[in-house]
Image (cartoon, rainbow, N blue to C red; front, side, top):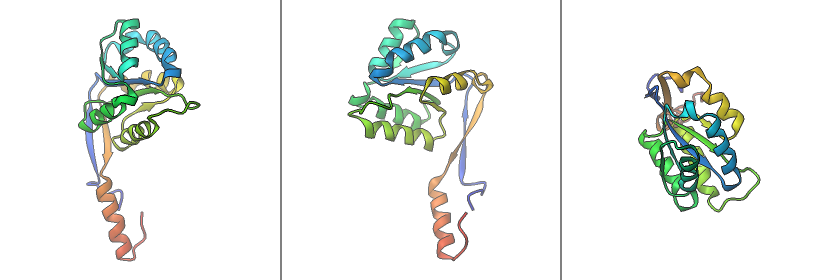
Length: 166
């Protein structure tokens, strides 16, 4: 049931990626240093980020970065909305796993949206390094967005007809 050809949508990602850069306060210095090291590669893509992170990155790297609101003031939700709209392809989110954040529910919602829309996400430097050096960064790529409504409906039908759920 879940492997039916109509339970997903293919969304093309261009060679030039639209990358969101996000960092909690305790990780801002880390993302700044990472972006400086990877400035040449990142300069080939469209960059955006949450408030303070985007402003710090733009000032310290001189890269053009579109700034949204800070995370606690709705920036995470703005990025999530752009993912849903298809305006962000990729996210680097240096989050601080040891600090409680006042906007933790927003962070969880952002990560959930990224998973739903099949967005590559790096939450630490190692993953960011692997993603940025992937050969897929230099080419078009087709994201496969699952239609969860159809999958839920298929499971419900299978349950109603006493069929094994897949």
